[in-house]
Image 1 (cartoon, protein in one colour):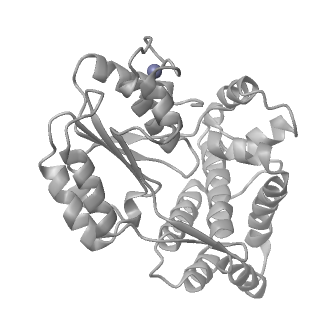
Image 2 (cartoon, rainbow, N blue to C red):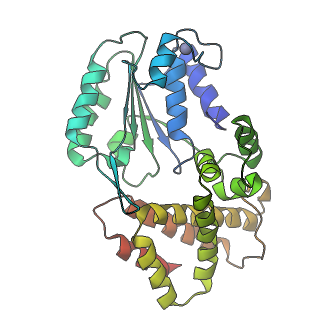
Image 3 (cartoon, helix red, strand yellow):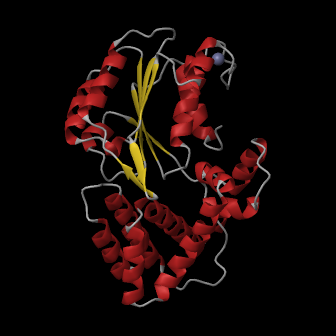
Length: 323
Ligand SMILES: [Zn+2]
């Protein structure tokens, strides 16, 4: 279920209604914010045989095929993941998988007007895979719709960006998150607290509701940042070592830091009405320029961590020295 992002939904559905869809879109925004959900919901709406104005019917052949992941006109490509001892390893998307995708797009639509491909995450493509995929982006077939998803700008080639229409995903407001969570009938747990910690990301809010143990870790993530700002280098390096042992946890911790810092930046700029989380309990004395520099460093580290060829511990140690 899609929570928030109504503006993007309206833009895409209205473009389709007017027959003005681009061949390729690039969805960019933080992890768990709703990019993949929106792509899947939009594909479902587009392929639905009995769609109402703003939603897919959910009962036609096409909707049922999508629910079973078996729609012949929809191809979703995600990097393979493997979990060992709590550490999740994500593999790159190789040329073989891109060739399968290209074959899918070269066929005529089976039962709908469009042939759709979704790639989640485009930053996971190997160089060889990107080169092969660029040909598809340069010469898209008729009625082809490609949706690329990325949590970061860092590793997307300009040649890909220039061939896509960009769609930026911004954090969803707390009120909208609350309405969405109530709609899906989630009553357990402390919803208010979860909304604060999810920091505008519906996927993360649902994740936290369903997994209380992650919820405890989230609060620890923000607390660790406040502690880091006051801690000495030895403490910081211990934290870098600990985080480097589980990159999924490290990424989530840095996301929390980044969103918390964003709110402090908004407070410092007098834009408190735009806060995603709560106000700071104690006033933060950082000037705007420093807050911006720290956010950039945190996000740069996240980008580095998302690329398996870099030394993650070194990247985290550098971050600890700079904040
Ligand atoms: Zn339908």
